[in-house]
Each structure stands twice: as structure tokens, then as C-alpha cells.
Length: 44
Image 1 (cartoon, rainbow, N blue to C red):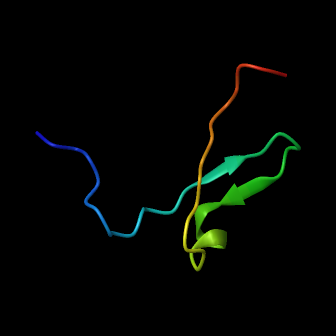
Image 2 (cartoon, rainbow, N blue to C red):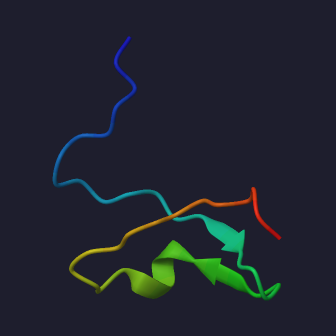
Image 3 (cartoon, rainbow, N blue to C red):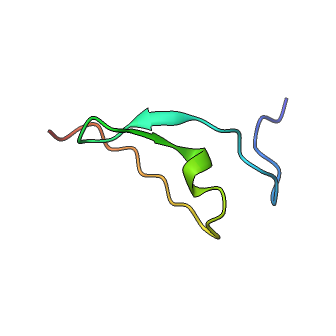
């Protein structure tokens, strides 16, 4: 079973809390050409 996303398809929307406690949603960046997501919870 291949669960990898298809190339050139729209990613599903999701929200995460940033380091300042603000909620950030992928939908906010929907019009951006490129979005880079870095998940780094190891350092506080």
C-alpha cells in the first residue's frame, strides 16, 4: 500500500501551534508557491 502523496496535488489542510503558542494553518499559505515545514520539538 503506497501512502505517499501524489506530486502536484494539494496537501490536506492542518493546523499546528508555533513556538509562540499561535495556531498556524496550512490554508493560510495556500497561495504561496512553496511551503517548507520544519517540525522541531526537541529544543525549548
